[in-house]
Image (cartoon, rainbow over all chains, first blue to last red; front, side, top):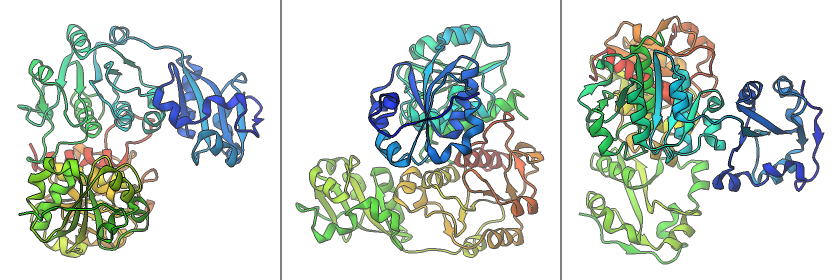
Length: 275
Length: 275
């Protein structure tokens, strides 16, 4: 049962302060808070809220969108305030034209460490690991692809960007709020922990000796992705023999999120997770 | 041998007029002209220029980038003017902060029809077809993926967006200037022509009966992609039995460019084009 909507007439109203100047605030980070944008992400937030993993703090909706998303709003408990306003007020609040007309402020309730996630994985597991992934679109796309191909977790090192950033969350179609994930630790720490847990660590490089589709399947597999453009650091590629996604020679390699999608597809297929 | 650089001191200089207010001009289209942005795309334009397919009209470079891209500039003939300016002038010209500092105005020299491209294909062929693809990032990514997986051509219907739009070109890492492609015609016209040319027409749908990796390979294959969000129109899915990319059930399907990348990877692998 959702809360009764409260009308906001003034962009300076304190109750909607967290939604003010969204873009500028995104850039400095929000320490445990995040902005969910659009109906798709709001729907996933409602599911996460029910599981106490990510919690909705308040919701702001365009007046003319209210009826259309009544079912989504009804999935939130009554103690989550729902504010409504007209387009001019919302644009003044957000600092730009908020066509989507649906915003929520969320809070991180649980933030597991990589070691906890690894300890909780089953006998067969597929994990995606990001090392220095810096682009929010790519982070969002990685989560979307990991979810599509039934990965069990995404582990981001401390130098990777925050997948709860508004745009990453949107590109992930909300899957950042569904998929188990952690952010922290160094590449060495993460890969050592995965190795100790019996994971086959798969790194990608266009010059890898083995083709991805020829890799013998393992019960536990970790796919490791590097920075946009430069890829993984040489010491990691030396320590874990890289495989290649077969492709046309002599070209710019694939975008990192697309490479992740293809590799997760192939690994999930090879290990019988999808079919 | 490149032209000697000519310094521009005034953003209103008529010689750099095509670069003024780039974003606004992009939105209205340029009828046979396009803007190439960044070193990667400029390098591909130089190759295309040598083959008379896309022709460079003029180049504008930030003064401090000139030495770094000397090798790229030297690939253009002397009759392509190279203008240089300081950052403040370039930003005033472009209408925003042009960090990349490398712009070229290009012109379409050859614009083949789909029928010409199809007629020129070999006995074995892989083609990507876009129906109503409206997002420039996705169009660019489709070309990048088609190039990576050795497709022979990309056919866009008349309702798809222009892949020569600045951002599509950039996301494609210049492959729009390399890959044979056409834009025009209706979905019906394109698919009928491909069917008549003996192509196995592959459409994608999450509810497709056959898994993509179980599809018997054909000598000539056309992968058909639909609009973002809605996918292909029902009549097309009914006429050409869709296949599915195996994935986790009950989720938002993959982004169209990622789906294209995975499908092209699988089709190229199944038909032995890559390995």
